[in-house]
Image (tube, rainbow, N blue to C red):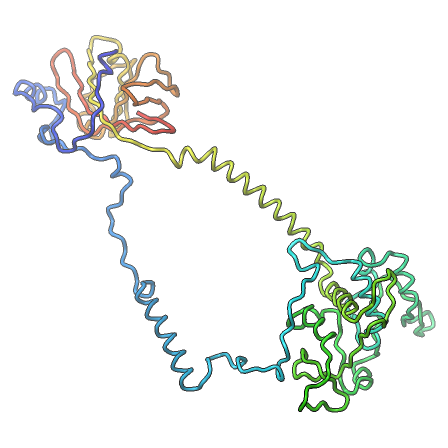
Length: 450
């Protein structure tokens, strides 16, 4: 068995001959028994590289012109040239007429204020929402409505259930008809919506000099700038600068488009008295009422951010598990190194023995049959398939699925991985058949295969 595995590892010389040419006696024996029909001169046998199985011999398709770099560069140059020509002819940039807007037409841009709820994981200041509702109820509700906010929406946000019920019962709602078919008045309930200040839009215009006060349910989402714009508008009332005439019934506000607004200034220091003792300055009241209006526009704000936090935790956990699986499951497979070696192995088959050279296993791909070690048979049926055949040397103590180190750093593993016979020849000397072949050995760092 030691002689069976007597082999040496050496680099593959793809053009060097493996064996000397057959003698005349050997050629005569081959032709008589029909065991081997030489297809080429064995002095000039050329090996086939295993890497060729993974290489492609097809030429890459030509890249279309529209996807080439030349087309991209040409389109970019054409676009820039067209913009430059348009600017030179018309004196302005194309599609940007608002670049000439001024403060008189569009108003000043509001600054960005550090709201307590503007962070990724920040929520509303519910104390400020409670104070903001007080400002709305005592100041803003005389002109503006909250048609999309019900009394029940305040429960658990700014007030308790009993407080909201008491406030709702202070308002009379028309209901009916009753058993007699008449409409009647009843106290408000939690399911009722905030009462509007006017019965219809015409009455609202008549009471405000022809201007219709907007509904404030979604005001922070309906105005560009959001909460910053509403706060700047409430605190931006100033005297008109010199040379600016303000018509009767209008007021100057530098943040309002056109700088003239029909709504007068409504917030003054000390206008309301907060229950918690907070100083009721004009800026404090503006901040509180804007926080309340921002909540009315996005009542799901806090819940949405809470769900986003939970989703972040879930995604982070999944990322950690993915990294763990990749590191400990796929890293060995993706980073393994495959090296190629060649070994010259010689087996001896004696037809008089029960076993075939202590475990030689020959696979014939054309006939799809094998010569088992328990049923030795002369490989006459494999003569035409020898050049593409595969052989695996077995040792008596090597069971399928086990590993045995052989021939230096070559490891044999019998799990269906068979080395490929690159080339070989068969010499017949009665009554002993010598099979000499050169096999290809693949050595892997993570899973070694002979």
